[in-house]
Amino acid sequence: MKKIIINTKNAPAAIGPYSQAVLVDKTLYCSGQIAINPKNNLIINSSIKEETEMIMKNIFEILRSAKMNFDNIVKCTIFLKNMDDYNEVNKVYSKYFKSDPPAREAVEVSKLPKNVNVEISTIAVK
Image (cartoon, rainbow, N blue to C red; front, side):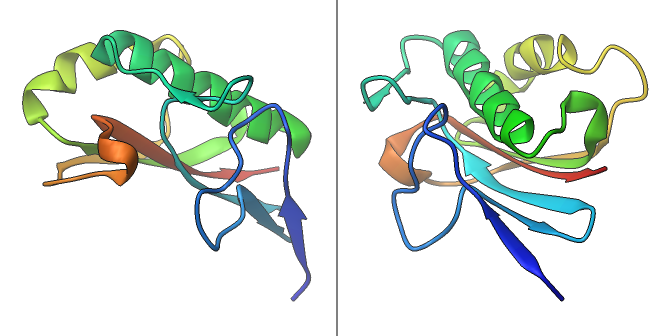
């Protein structure tokens, strides 16, 4: 098994001992993304919509650095601090998956890194 570490300055740097993503064969395992603006390292949390948009942009940059796009995503996991935000997150999320959306689960959790409201992780395949 050969692991290729994916790292881009266009997405937030890891805030712990993990990689932004790891490519194994044709599968890309992306670490959970939170709404950190990679240009200034500030958390975007003025609204759940803006938070989700920033996350999706970060995911895009990681995918792009692995020569993939949203069509390559086969699985997503959404972690929500409050399940009441589910519909708003879905509105933003659905813009990125116009047809044949990936498999997914969304779960409510008690706390997320940096006290954000949402985190999304993905698996993509070439």
